[in-house]
Length: 559
Image (cartoon, rainbow, N blue to C red):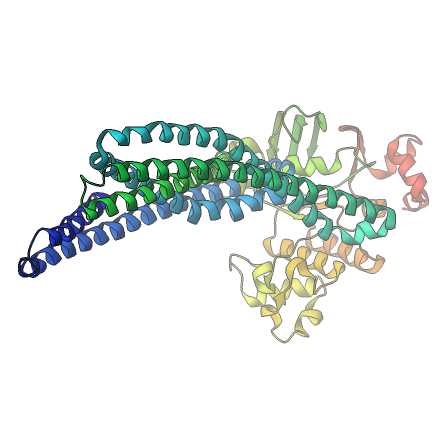
């Protein structure tokens, strides 16, 4: 409708100007008001349709973009942890950054331009062929050549853009990892620093190579398109010169103007179409992430009694576990039964499967086989949110999100300030927090940088105390602590979690020497399980060797 009104206004203007040579001045002036009114009506109608077209494209684009973005967020928030293990941060950020920018702005603009150019070409060709008659048919082979050149260009251009995005993700991921691990890289000396520099240079070179090839393909296309455009303009000009005695000056000007539009819009449409083809990689990549495998439902109504768990028992029955499908098993057919309130130490050499037990317990990944019961209820029958809320974990490297201290300790605002101060006193952090100007509203920096490692660990302990969970998991929580903080943490565990089941994954064996039982892991299996003293009395085994290597035999014998 917009282009039809535009052509109609141009034809009306051409007809109006042509009457100047066949009518008297008085007649021309007399019809001016009528002609201006019609021309103005057509122009205003065309403008209204342009605005309507722009609003329609913008509305449709925003709606599609919002749907994709919501789907992306919902999908990633529900993705299992193994998805984030195999997909680098840079690749995920590219979906939210460059790809969503394409969906938000570039694609709607390109779609609008392609459709407008298509209708401009149809009406311009129709008008040109109508005016220059059979000579206009010469333009059709040139249009076909346009199509062939464009089709040859579009596919490699799309793949080159895909390669550019892939190599850019690799480069961004390496930069992010290098910044996060800068201290560790430098600790290994200049040789490792230079190795990271060489890898970065290789990533940059590879990305630049793909960008250069993309630009080269664009120049190849531009040269051929401009040659064909010049041919179209030449054919149209020769036809107008040949028919100069049969056409009015207004029609000649109109057709010549349209021939310029044809060349410009043909070139522009192929360029934009190729850009649209490459840009459509973005929604394809976003849509790929909206369909990632989801972890189990967060809540399954009626799967567990409202009073669950009434006890902190943990039972594994022939459980096997792996991190990714088709990967080797990291836990192999393990079975054990932990009674409520029991304190169990979990030890073993590096890679034995100790931390994998935690992953299985919290259903970070689903079990490969076997059953796991928490408080007497099969964990696979309940939602992951229900399961994880029933347990507390104190990790080796506590994560503190940026915000206020109160938000960290009580993100759902379920406890009073008085209750928060009570748990802070139990972990001996009252003085430290009271010294802050804003007390509980004091700011926690990203990753808790304004707190020491020991203080972060005790804040994590305070959060666990606040929830009073039946089951507490300590994943090598004291590995980076000094002796004094370690003793303080052990005191809190003995006093405050006396009625809770505590599973302690130990790096330093002195943290589990007073446990009720020790489970010894080796190559994903439980090879020993008994009281510490009995394991030592055996005089052999992995636990005996670990205690001997660490100098803990005397402590157990004395105890």
